[in-house]
Length: 465
Image (cartoon, rainbow, N blue to C red; front, top):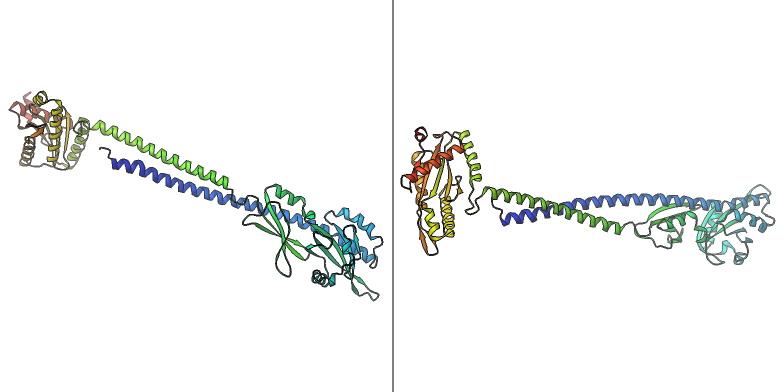
């Protein structure tokens, strides 16, 4: 019943450590799931933001380029002429704020531009003889529809995009011929800094607006936020006339929220430590209760069961013998002339004699039998499974022989004898308490008859009273 160091090491450190790592693993898995869920939510929100912004950009471009259809209608009405083009363009441009300039290019040569100031280099520009513009001009003419090109390094300086609508007019025979282009110019990145792009940057996102070059396949950046893109951007396509743009988007700090993750990890560690500490306290409390129970059931000097502990074991042995119709011997003995040892050699010598003698007798008892100290020099033993009277006599005699072995104390040899009284169940049909009383009575009878003796309880003593 004693609490060993091995038990303490195993229970007090093994289980708390196991609990700590188990709790840490469980909570870490929970943190992992919560982080996956957070990332899914963040990316889902990012997709919504990107799609909303892409839709706004697409609508803005379509609105800006729609002025080309107005000019086309006027050219159709004027049979290739727009009187007072600068005056008309001056009225149209305020209605299309993303447009920087409007141009007319009959036969592919720019002849009109508004505003002219700052755009003088484009006058006379022949699209079909410019190596950088010729392929796109041919594609626009042959396609017969509005196309949006760019980003370009503009002739008048800066970056921009150009929307070209081919104009086809009927000749005298009613056949349609290529008249030239109506061109809408936008400048980058100023005209692309619409409310949506500004809003997502203020909302903590970094973005990049780009497209693939239709001939080289190279990535061409159109506009970007002041903060750089992080890893694993979300990409959303934007349909523009004759081309596809892409909007890439990430949080400015990246998808991983490292401060929050560190806080969660620290919380998981603290929680695991608290759980392990609680387990440690529970084990410590349980061990303390076990020690208290052990102390309550154990003799402090000899480490044998005390009266309370031995009576509990006797109750168990008696119950088993009663259920299995077995036998039981309850014996009582004390040390003859023990007071003389204390008086002559001192109480330390007496304690030594008690410990040595009890250890020897305990070793002489077969496994499964019990020995306990009731107090002073009085001891109680319980023998299980002894059947015949010869076996009983041999067992009792062995105890007497063991007790007579000399005990050395600081150079002095002590020789002690014991007086034994016992009773047998089921011959003596009483319960545990009564068996102990009868064994005690038999022991005093042995001492009365001369000590160092063995005496069995006789029911006649009870009737004699």
